[in-house]
Amino acid sequence: MPAPYSPLAIANNFLEQFGSRGGIEHMKLQKLVYCSYGWWLAVNGLDGNRLTTEGPEIWKHGPVFDSLYHAFKIFGRKPIVTPQSSNPFGAPENVDADDEYTRNLVSWIWGRYGHLSGFALSDLTHKPGTPWHRVATDNKFKVAFNTEIPDQYIWEEFNELLNAAEIAASHQNVQHESDQRQKA
Image (cartoon, rainbow, N blue to C red; front, side, top):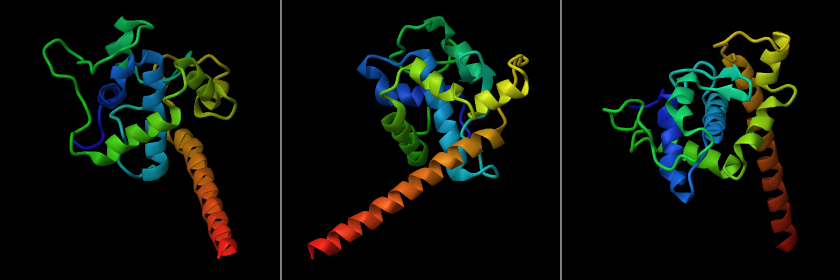
């Protein structure tokens, strides 16, 4: 099943690839799935397929996928080590084994954000100007339950990060070429 996946399938892929090293706490999984969602939008655009079947909502501790919250709330703050099922009779949902594009995204997100704690990731999503903060301030910090963060806001933030990364990479390439010419 190519994208869109359930948020649980994306979280389970983080657990499959990186959970055996001591587990991943629920809050951190929420934020990793959110970052995956944001980077997906930045690369694939607002007109492309979404990564997940639902968008993130604004909750107290940052962006949260409601269905993922209900799947993992039983763990509290304990690390989750293995992929989980949304019901007692089904196998855990996951990214398709042959979907290298999405699996590589999950791996890349882990490399970029995996060293941060759930609270550190939550802090990143609360900074002024972030999609979470924009929705919160638009609503004077009295946000109705189940309020989704607009994809437009998320795309704007992550597209800016993508553009900054591309500019940095371009500067590195120019510097590398200059260094090579000087050595020649």
